[in-house]
Length: 347
Image 1 (spheres, helix red, strand yellow):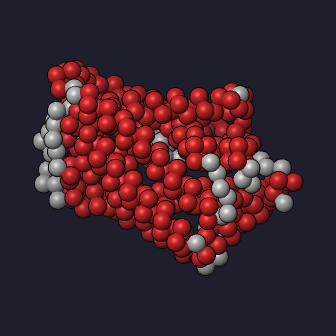
Image 2: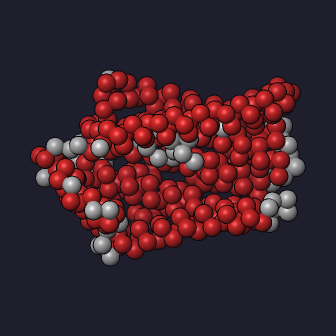
Image 3: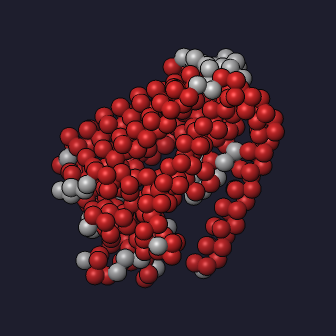
C-alpha cells in the first residue's frame, strides 16, 4: 500500500513539474527576450547588490525567529549553526512540490544531530516557527488582497477566489491555535479522523505527535512573550522584504509604489504554495500578471522573476553544501530518519 502511495506521489510530482516547465516555456518565449533586453539596458549593479544583501537578511530574520522559539523551550543553539540549518531547510523545501514546505524534517534532524535538541522539542519548535511564518504570510497576503481587490482591471471572480483562499487559511490557523491552547490537538485529531491511529505502525508516531502538541500548547500558554516577539521579528522581516523588492526594481530601472510591491510579494507567496517544484512557471506567470495589471509590462514582471529565481538558486546551492557533510546517502534518507524515530528516542 505504502509503495503504491509513494509511486502515485512520484507520478504527481512529475506531472506537476511538466506543467511548470510548460508554463515557464510559454512565458519565456512570450516575454523572455524583452525581459532580457530590459535587464541589459537598465541593470544597476548597486541596487542589485543591495537586493542580494537583503535576500540574505531574510534568512537572518528567520534564524532570529527560530532562536526565540527554541530559547522559550530552554534550548540555546549557536546562531550561525541555526542559520545554516534554516538555509538547508529552505533548500530542501525549494525542490519539493511546494517551495514553502518540505524542509522542516531536515531542520528537525539537523537540530538533533548538530545541536542535541531532541526530536520532540525540535519538532515542536519547527512547527511553531512554521505557524508564525504562515500566519505572517496570510496577514500580509490579506493586505495584498485588499489592495489587489481594488485593482480595476481584475475580474471580480478572481478577486473573490483569492480573498476566499486567504480567509480560509486564516480560519484554519485560528482553529489550529484554539485546539493547541485548549489541549485538544490538531494533527493527532486528523489521524483519528482518518482512522490512522488503528494502524499499528503509526501508533508510536501518533503518541510522539501528541507529546509534540503538548509542548506547542505549553508554548502558546506559558511563552506568550516569545510568541509575540517571534511575530514582531517576522513583521520586521516583511518590511525588509518590501525594501528588498524595491531595490530589485530600482536595479531594473523602475520605481513603483508600495502597493505594487505588496501585491507582487503576495503573488510570490501564492506561487510558492502551488504544488510545483520551485514554483516553476507559476512564479514567472504571477509576476508577469502583477506588473501587467499595474501597466508596468509583463516583461518587467518576468525580469523580476529572473532575479528572484537566481537569489533562490544561490541559497539552495548553499543549503546543499551545508547538508553535504552528512553524506548524500544520508540526505536521501533524512525524511525517513525523522519519521521513523527509534523507540528509545521517543521515550
